[in-house]
Image (cartoon, rainbow, N blue to C red; front, side):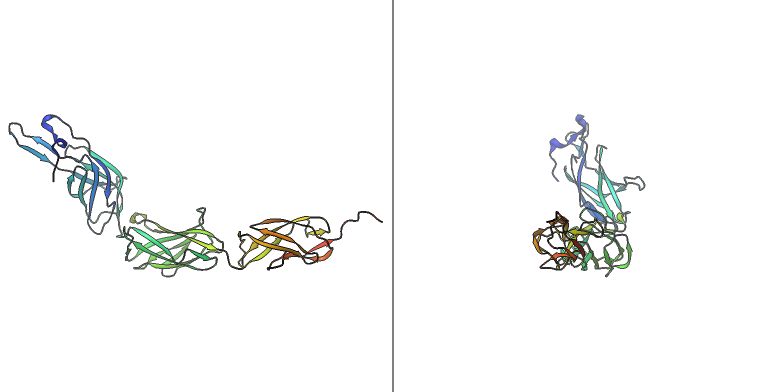
Length: 348
């Protein structure tokens, strides 16, 4: 190891060492089932030189650095890293010993001068070798009321699959605005000991992961989340976005005015109706499509592009005891209603 003499503190000359500074730790997590070698990146990791008075040309080089994991809650005593040593003035190497209680720890480093630095939330000790939960749907888009198969499994920091027994997991679904979806249908699939909970499932992954099924009855973009039951495991949550689309069939909904009830139209008196496309599951369809509006009694009324709920003005020409509005080219129509003759204007 080479040290630049200008960077060494010579106590005999009364020069103080700068305080050590921690920037990051690599890796920043480890499994408590094995020792983890870490590199502490920072600066001012200088050794200390002590000149021996009266001993010409002789000096002691003190490269002693110490490092500890520190429980931010103060419940657990500081845990010393093993064999801490300086590679250069920017890097220390040490070993986090196995068997440590899982949790999120701060890191403290102390140099030869006795000065130290603390990095908050520097290192996670995990009960699992895994780094995260992978959520992999069989497709990114599916029709509503269709069951989406979703695979859940553990991965290491390189996103490679990790096989592990008895890993507890919670799964839930939110809509595009982040609201928990409480009416989604979940199937446990291969999730061991699965239990239903509001908006999701809870259970244990198989050693190689598990498949579950999810379906919704309302079109939209959703996100499925999977997280360890024990947040102290230090395993990242996983998520995947899935789009459930409208069904393929179309029918027209024609909403008559609410008043009077029951609605009665009059020849020559315009009134507004609301036109909406629906799929076979009763979901409104926002995609624009042309409607050729007709009346059973008055015949063809006109053409209108319907995109979401669309207001259309109707003016009927014939009185009719039982009329209905609809679309010439598709299913769907209004309720039956009566059309009265026009009001008498004058007598000839």
